[in-house]
Structure formats: structure tokens, C-alpha cells
Image 1 (cartoon, rainbow, N blue to C red):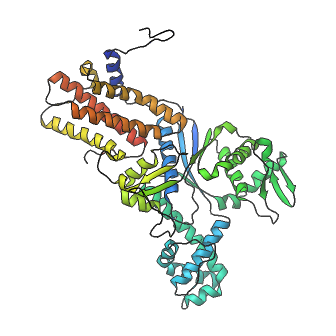
Image 2 (tube, rainbow, N blue to C red):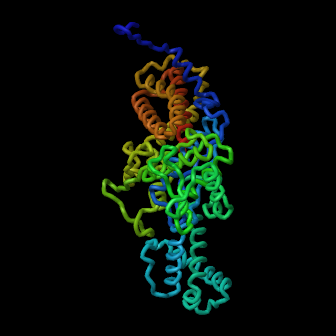
Image 3 (cartoon, one colour):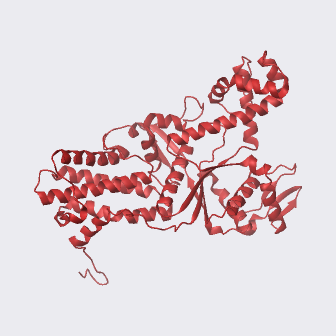
Length: 486
């Protein structure tokens, strides 16, 4: 109909909506082949192996994993990767901290280094592995474990190095366990130290120098990143010969390019915003396409309980660990809450709300919609009522406003998935599932399903089945379970 000058309103017929519902039963429903098999590397988490993951790391882990799931679902060949920062100052600081904690575990009253890592997690680690470490230090130095304190103090440098290396490896295993508790898996771990040892970092700098993009000034070596849009040139090797963290990043991203990926995605904390132009500059200088590099920024998480801030963890000494949150509220609630906002938006995570079993808790409300439909089908089966295929059901009988609202949301789902994948924004799936669950609960509460005449019953059972399928797909994309009972 004409709706004023220059405007036309279109209304879709019941037949159109019925056909849109039939599409939901197809195996490839909501799976656009956006990627066509193109290779994407997504690097995320990449926390230093110097302590347990905190909730900020957890948000980046869940966001990176959800983006990877979306891209795989829409036709990309995705590799998940973790960059292990096991070289440089932070590892030296870890070594000093672990050495002091091992001395304490052996009864020696020493203080942590001034810049050491606080919290009891390192003491726990040293107590657990005390005998193993002492035996290794004794073997490496020719000392004796009979007097642990004397052994450690007589061979301080060797003990410090062994403590640092072992602590980093054990902490990385703990980090892997923390990610597994959230259903986050990596396919590759790349060591910064290994990049240096293999000469990859030095080779990348030599390539840039040969192209005229690295020069010497004031005894240091500089990368001419300003030529590629950065605000200034960057040091890659200090006057003492030490390579910078940025130099390692140049080598790492050159290795990524050499592996033949069509697109590189990095998930970083929002405090690394200013780091993007220099890495993009390095990629362009190395011959990569700048538009094939994308960084997803993740803001910090404000942890509360009933509106009151939660700041201190039990073992970390300065922050709440990711594992503490997962243990309290569960993996599903943790993932859902982390994904409820766009990554670069600040997030408040209310632990009390995440454990509520009510409509106030969005993840409970969404999962309960799925469980409610499963219970409905059990009742139908007990009554000898079968759920027909959508193509065989009189879907034109779905005329109530609440039913039409559900039909519309179901029809929109493929567009939501496509937009979320294109924009790398899984929170769009979260919002849609919340809206879909709310619409289903309204419809369920206002309209009877089983004890109505057969044709209407068949149509409403099919509608419920299709809502369940979309909830299953959406929850799967977010890495959540779709429970059959709650």
C-alpha cells in the first residue's frame, strides 16, 4: 500500500511466513558460506605465563572462541592460536619471584623482590613441586638436597633460572586448564622464546632493513613505522643490543603471514589500542595486506556481587581469578555474561545475578526456554502426540500476535548470524536469543498447545520445535549447552 509520498509498505502473506518456517528444518539453515574455505588465524588470550588468568583474560578468551565458532559456522577455515610471552622482563621477574617462594617453601624467611608477583599461587606451586625442583637444581649444579636452603643460596643463579622456566611451564598448564573449564581450546601455542632461538625475529628485522625500513640512531635500531601511518618510528633494538617486545611481534606476524593465512585476527586488551598502528605498519612493510589484519579490543570487566564491587581473589592476592568465577557461577553463565556486550564496551558482571534461577538472569531465561520445550515434547510423547514436519503442518493457523512475533524472530535469525560473523560481534547472537526466549515464554504462557484442536496443536508444536532448533544453534555458536531439563 502507498504510505505517503515516496513510501510503500509491504505485508508478507501467511504463506510466506509458513515457507520461512519450513526452511529452519534444513541442515544448512542459517549457515551462509561467507568464507568459502578461506583461512583465518585468530590469536587470543596470549596472557603471560606468570600467573592465573583473571576475568579480563576470560572475557578475551570467550570472545575469541565465540568469534572462531561463528567464522567456522559460516564457512571459514579457522585456526586458534595462543602466543606465549616466555621471554623478556616478565619471565625474569617470574624467575625471581618463584626462587623467593621456593626459599620460603624450604623454611627460609625471605621477602619477594620489589617487583615480584604477589599472591600465594606461586608459593602453592613451589610447595607442590618442591622436591622435584630441588632434585633438578642439585643435578644441574652438583649440589646436595640434604640442606635445601644451602643448595638454593649457594647456586642462586642456576636455581633462579630453573625455578623461572619450570614455573612458567606449570603456570601455562594451569592457564590451559582455566580455558578448558570455559570450553576454550587452542590448536597452536607459539613460543616467543622459540621465535628468538630460531632466528625468526632477527630475520624479519633484516628483511625490513634490506627494504630500507630499519635504520640506526643514537646507538639503537628503529623501524620507520611513521611511513606507514604510525604516529612515530619505533625502537626494535635498544642500545645494549636487547630486542624489544615489538621486535618479537614483528617476527611473530611475519611468521603468521608466511603460513599463508588470508586474514589475521588478534584479540587484545583495550589498553593495547595504541599498539595497533605499529603492528599494522610492520605487516604492510613486510608485504602483507593491511586490510587483512584486524584487532578486536576487549575492555576490562567490573566484577560485582549484588551491586557491590568484588576486587580481591583468594589466591592471587590482587585480583579475582577466572577459575574462581567459573567455579562459582558455572561455564555457561560465565560465557554468556562475557558475551552480553560488544568487546570494546565496558562490562559489569554481577555474580549474584548469574546464579539466580529466574527471569532476571538472562542465561537462565534462555536455557529455560529450551528446557521448557523439551518438557513439552515429553508430555506430548506421553500423550501419544507426534510432532509433524514443518512442511506437513498447517502453519497458516499461527495467527496470534505472540505467534507471529515468534515467527518473525525465527525468520530473522539467519541475518543475525551473518551480521554477527561479518562484524565479528557474537553479542548480536546473545541479544537475539534473549529476545527469542522472551517471546517464546510470552507465547507459552498465553496460548495452550497440547489441549487444543489437532490442527492448531500440530502448528504450535512445530513452532515450538523450530524455536528449540534456533536456540540450539545459537547457544552452540556461543559455546553454551542447551539443557533438556532445569
